View 1 (cartoon, chains in turn blue, cyan, green, brown):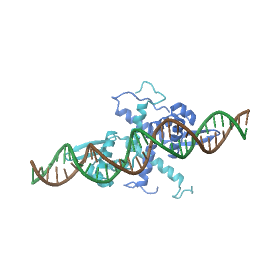
View 2 (view 1 turned 60 degrees about the vertical axis):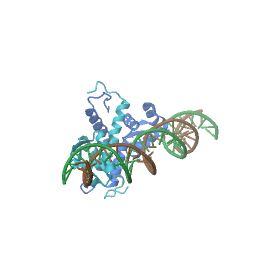
View 3 (view 1 turned 90 degrees about the horizontal axis):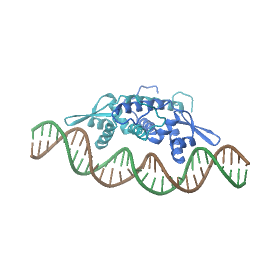
View 4 (view 1 turned 180 degrees about the horizontal axis):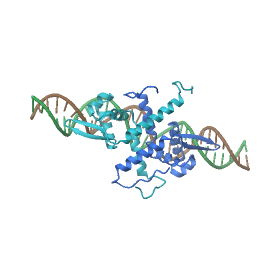
Length: 115
Length: 115
DNA sequence: GACCTATATGCGCAAATACACATATACTTG
DNA sequence: CAAGTATATGTGTATTTGCGCATATAGGTC
């Protein structure tokens, strides 16, 4: 990272950036991340809160962990996930704000992000 | 802005947020957006710069415009696209920074400590 | 050991997505 | 009007993705 930003991004870099965005491009994963804004939680807690199936929640959590969005901590039988990348808060903040601004005329389907 | 802030986001809100992230979750679209950081450009210019086919570039641009990421300006035969949502810069900056940090932390290929 | 709980994973399927090719539309110029 | 240029779109296809179901693994209790 000694050089300045190249004018054209490499394919690998674009792929990495795209994957990061893709991690947040799914409603259920957003629901999980949002639930983890509060504090770290176990898989079963997240299953209860989100209403998803255990298998699906587990898969999404693993995907988010592989994307370095979440951290995994195993304690006995349970596995606790937590937000490990602080930029996730910023990303969600920015996107929520932008969307709110874009559809002030539309429904108020929005609430705070809570943090 | 909101009367109350529900702890759980509505499905519609999650869908909107996910779609916004999904718009940036594709290498070719990131390439287009990145090319437009400089200034507004026509479709054919973007085709040249990115090396994509005309049809594919056009479709991606339309998708980005529908997602309110890009604006469309028609001038005679040409159509110029430009970044309309200023938050896009922030999003890309944040993600790039986060990835860079993760890479240096993991690989340490540039003078850091090994793995 | 058997048994329970919490989490992960193999498998199949339906839907979404990105792409290439060909064609259509819109606009300009002669 | 015809011909050329720039952009959009219809169609088919291969790949990816999200999900449910069943099952496997890991760790705890008796």
